[in-house]
Amino acid sequence: MEAVAKLKNCPMSARKMRLVVDNIRGKEVEQALNILRFTKKEAATWLEKLILSAIANWEHKNGMTVSADDFDLYIKTAFVDQGTMLKRFRPAPHGRAHRIRKHTNHVTLVVENKIALESDNATAVVEDVAEETND
Image (cartoon, rainbow, N blue to C red):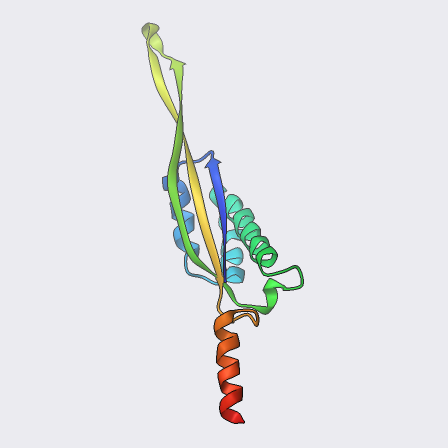
């Protein structure tokens, strides 16, 4: 079972965000949170909140009684896309103007569990077949 969390219009360039996302892609959630806590880039604070949101989405999707601590959650996919660009002008000498481009990005994060849930149909079928063969 997987859950998705998205961060849209983050006021940072996609290139800067990708540097941090590449460090946590494919890692377990606890390990990724530890990496982000000790990363000195601004992108780390945005991604830490996004991972916590993805964990909450996973728990809500699987019912309120299920805790994410019991299952080995890992970051299945994480990617960064370029968002819209705000264009501004700054006065320059001799009556000219320089263009300022303020970049934004969109981050998509998917977490998935390694340990199967009891409510999954595949595990329920496997358990039923195992019980029939034991009888």
